[in-house]
Image (cartoon, rainbow, N blue to C red):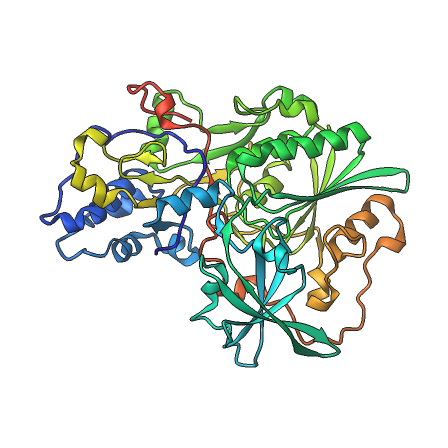
Length: 498
């Protein structure tokens, strides 16, 4: 199975090829998927002009290799664009309903050569196989099915088959074996609104939200939390995105609409501007279709975010090298409207946006060929495939971006646990380095300010930029996902939609 990528709700596009069969089809039907790759990228890819003279040949029998061969160097270096041959898992992952164990992991070196690793649990979703097995934050997985964790087998930690985990714990300056647990994955609910709390200190009411992913299906949970903050009279907000790899633009816009000043939300002020390839930009502009996503816009089944808006003039955002795409968009694009205090580290660096392209199904993504133009055999060949290419770069309302240096730098640089796993606290504990710094900045109470303790542990979290082990099913960290509307909701002759 190829790396899975995808979105929940898909942005309609130029349906340029919607009435056609594959353009310039290659001689053998076995190359049909490669033709789909070319036809999609040559129209919608941000670097579409690089597709010239790269049409598939009879030698391009492996669609994944062909896809990789077409990618722009910057895109390839960052690992932004992907292809999948597993559409159903794609949809489940982006609906927040994957088949999984239910934990999120980071890695640390287990030997000097860094050929073996510890997997450290960052958090566990409730009502999942991981939580049922008693796994929790800071637990260390040292072996999978009795074998050390390596580059070759670590993906079993994200697999869909049962596995045994040899658990370790910190003991003094050592890591010692603790227990063995066997966990069987199942379809779970990954509500990203994982933890929230209100702290009362220094005459302030401080709302805290730990948000794991931008998943539009759970915007109702966001609304519920912000509504409770508003009813309680929250005066300050700490938004914890330390592990948030991003996701849907609609979720980011909805979240921002409950944070930004009420007046700019009510006026539906611009939040994000998308810049596509020259052909798409020209087509959008010719049809007078906006490339701007605005605050205060919400779906038919969602509540008006103004009803839970906190009308803030400052927000404290915890973001790290494990914060990507929509997390960075939220941090960066709120700045024209509100003071954003960034606590943590340089962010992961994702300033691009993507669409899902499917050969013919508008329920999955932007479709390349009209369903009626394909035979039953061609549909069977193409049906499980989809691409998630980069189609745009995003800017804030003023047209500014952070492509140079390519990440966001914190106002208050700190490492989680001062760089050591031992010093991690529970999520929401005021003794947490990041939350403690935020509470200190808000209240001025020196008791909250984090102080580095003497460390006995040799287990350091690896710098995120240097980690080559990451969830192969993690589709949100690659780029902001544009997901406003479904193609089929639009008149067929109206070719360009937001």
